[in-house]
Amino acid sequence: MKKLCLLLLSTALVGWADRAWGAAVDIELAILMDTSSSVPPSEYAIQRQAYINTFSNNFYNQFVAPLNGVTLKPGQVGTGRIAVNIFTFGTVVPSTTVVRNVGWAEIASQADATAFANQIAAQLSYVGGRTPIGDALQTTADSMFNNTFDPIYSVIDISSDGQNVPTIPAGLTPRTGSNYARCKGLTNTTCVSDPTKSIVAPGGVDVINAIAILPFANQIILQSITYGNNLSGNPNHIFPAADASVYEETLAIKLGAEIGAPTAVPEPGLAFGLIGLGIFGVGKRCLSRRE
Image (cartoon, one colour):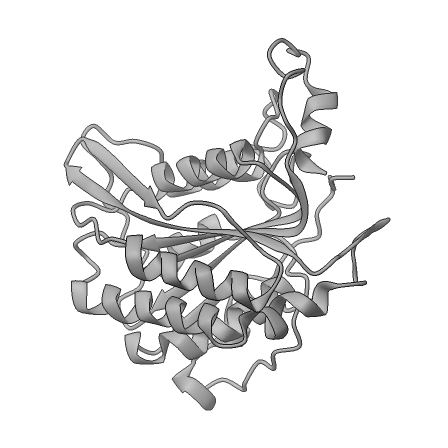
């Protein structure tokens, strides 16, 4: 498991011995929403409601319960529980990145999922400003590593138009932020310089996926930050929504891909107005897997 692996691999053990390792979960899911000024508040409201609806409406039975008894990694079997948090990001002034979140929660029942939906409704907020994608990925990866859960598998979902507008002075590029998440804890440059993005550090995030809201999404930037193997075997990493109105349907397809529930992927141009699902980056097989 990622945190224990990194503990064993670390050469700097001071301060780690007193760390209280948290509850074991199947998947650690960090949902990262772009709420910069390039995403209008009206679109943010649609996305926010989509997450509330998704977690409220049979989320556990559809996405989490099917993990029970499934081998997620060699020798590691799911028990039907995940950890989840949802983040929003933007800037308050050109030089300050803001990443807000509602707090990590364990979902082991539909009651837990509904409670998390209520937290989204009560706490999630729009930020505005610039679009520091790299900085937001770094902050999210740090939160995943430092929370009280120990997952078998970890995923970052980013919902963005991909129009990276960094802070002034500029922070991390989107690709650097992605590499930070993927190579978390490694002190050498082999992982960071891997052009295929197939190496994942023992302490790194297994997968980054994206929802791209068309028609203005910068898919080149989104492709540069996504990587990994979705549990379902679905090779897509970018899940395009024709517009914000079909966001909830696109979200269900993406969650089915990364969590592993048997959600069918429609043909391009059919249900939900999705387009181009077959042309996006194919996930690479991790060469370095967490045990």
